[in-house]
Length: 182
Image (cartoon, rainbow, N blue to C red; front, side, top):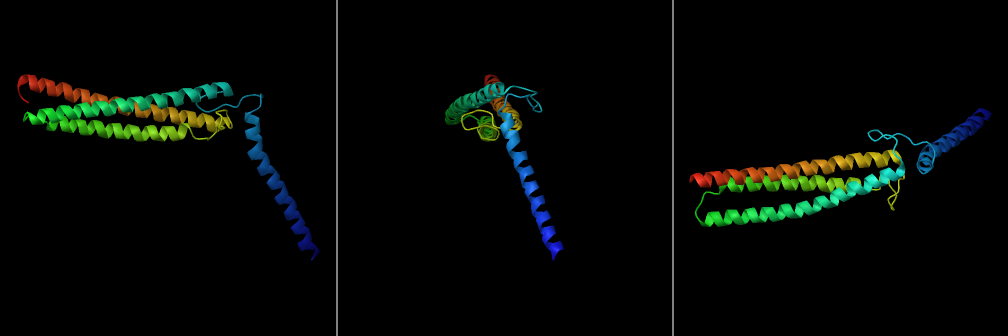
């Protein structure tokens, strides 16, 4: 019976030690992120001060907001292009080429909007950040910055591709119209 009791006490002591270690591993890195000690390296960013991380976070968030204005402009361009299709179809012109281009444009814009929404979730999540915008966890903040920046760049690439699709199709349509083929 003594054996069972002493092993129970040993087990309780080991469990207590494990709980203390777990608490230290979760609390100390967060507390250390706010200290003025040596900066931990963030993969892909290096040893940036927290102030720089906060400025980068604001900058990427600004890019995201600016991209919303581009989506508004893309909607206006799509509506104008649709008006062109309507006007040309009333003149009994073949507009299948224009309709295909508009469909590709709208698909690319929708894809860019999805990526932009995901970037917003990534950038404005509290992963690594406090609610007031300060750094809570350097590693998580750096990862969210890098991922959010890449998503904003991907959305920008898709928007650029969508605009190029529409521009090229409009140029091609103009050439065909001047030749009298449309």
